[in-house]
Length: 397
Image (cartoon, rainbow, N blue to C red; front, top):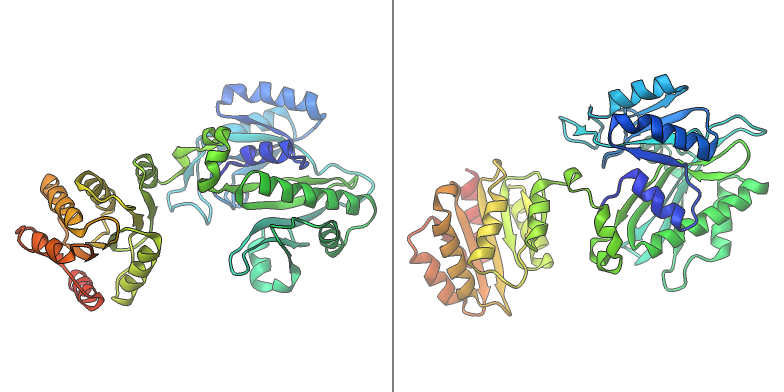
């Protein structure tokens, strides 16, 4: 589950991570009140207006502005709130900005120069360990750093069974070139950041930039946090953080009926039981010259109602040229799945304008093939993977 910047900062602050303070606003009428409250809390002279959408690159797209007074603040807030913000991570038409964050200015003058760093915590799946990735080159061009100067990016792996050791936090601060108070503050920052990542059951926590202020404080100026959906049950309050207006509507609809669905940019719809078989099926589609239009795991239940819901989700995509059903009948019987597919097809026959390709293997698979072949419907069966490949190629002609 993706969070907005202001939500991520609230969780970070709760876990002891120093952040740039701010007020979230969704109505232009509330800008004055938010600004006055922020000025009283922080004594800031300037304000930063930040669009709140689930996408990076907001600054380059015009979604981040610095206001030097209340007049500029109102002007920038009016122009950003309600705009269609386009960034490299949004759809072509952009994303509607429904919320803004009015934040304090942390780039104030002082006895030393400020510096920007990049720090993230994530899972390294290849080693089954957590990893802190960091760089001295923080800011808006971090992507070009990874592409052009990868030697400036450092990695520190953490054994989750042991946790982050003090010497590892010190190593990060040292490699970032800090000393004195800023070094000590960075050590505390890294430790708190790791704690927040673990306690919140996050799958990604990215801070860009991490700022060393002119008085040697270490602050999270921006924050991207992704929470593990599978762990939300442990944090009941986190459910209220989900912003469904920022998510794919088809994926939201699928989640509401208990289906695991991920929208992809392809032309062959998939309905499979089990994530492993789903990934293998998507590979098969690519080898056959197609592209998977979705990931859809229907789980162990594939009755008529569930199949009909799945078909409706897949067929909302106009690019789909065929729907591929690949079910292994272990616990679930293939003949029951076949009856569900036939019944679902009859219920929504007018909506189905593309061929349905079905491969059912496992318990009662022979009976299942007979049920589908004798239905008289535009449902094509396949037994082997080669049959499946041939059917996909036919659909793409």
